[in-house]
Length: 452
Image (cartoon, rainbow, N blue to C red; front, side, top):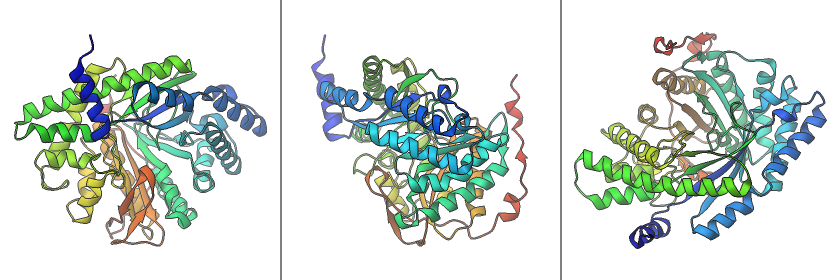
């Protein structure tokens, strides 16, 4: 029997508290596209993507009309391209990125992810060539996203790859300098990358996935923030229960959309990603959730503890609501995409050091942080190494998406637009780590990785 109170509550969540489905992402395997002929490879990739996802946008629009739930993004993720391209030259990989762009435009999706490689233990020639192609590929496209996995808890950290990714970020910043280095907003460096993440820029279709699959990313920071505010001065146990109940309701909506999208598109249902993904809109902020718990500003002492409570409660509530949970499934803390985070940086409450500490207890890492465009590649590599170490040691996914904004420095602001928002330029340490990064080799896996 329909419960009127539940229906009205869901309507309020959508209208007043920014509840939405952040993304419906179709994963597509490209292994059956492999060819010795680069031109034939390009044709097969384009045909496979446009054929498999031809109804993705229209089905999402149908679901919006049927259920009244906004679906903000329609996306596609593909097999990491270095696996498909093999020993292609960097120039050929750039052409593959342009093929992905054409497919994304044809489908009408906002992003396509998977232009990346897994290099946690070493770099095959194809992976190295793809990484060399990333700056030009992201400069020539607007919808292609790139991700590189440089570490796992089992393998340790490939510091040669970390050094190379610092250089790659800086080259990408330079080649997209006319647009405030926005190419870097489409590039993320991972430890322990999941194979079923629906969120960009890190979405890929893992090698253990089916031919096609539907993964859904839920949202709802505003719903959680409102529930905590209404609860008043309750203790932490009750606070955690409130968050769990809200997360359960949000995830049930996500599972409904996932099942229906799967059925209508004829692709298996994969996972629901429980991540609380903020936007620049007022009231749709993870920082506001933490502040509603009693912090004067996000970033003050107690912030990491508040975030740990939030992340754990969201997962507990979400797991009860969905038969398959995956992806990243935590609270995102991207600076430029969260109005509360932006304000916290502007008033001096939140630093990159505090953000790094917060990533030890949440998903996914140092995300959408604008830094001065004149930082060195070694400094960027140092930031990556620090954050990736947190993921490796704690056996969790962490990632880095830094945007060195060419021509801008601390005290200035950069406007990315749309869901990417805007961000104040944050300072990095002025002391060098170049000798450390220059050592190369691998940082061994931690002892607790030996679980066999």
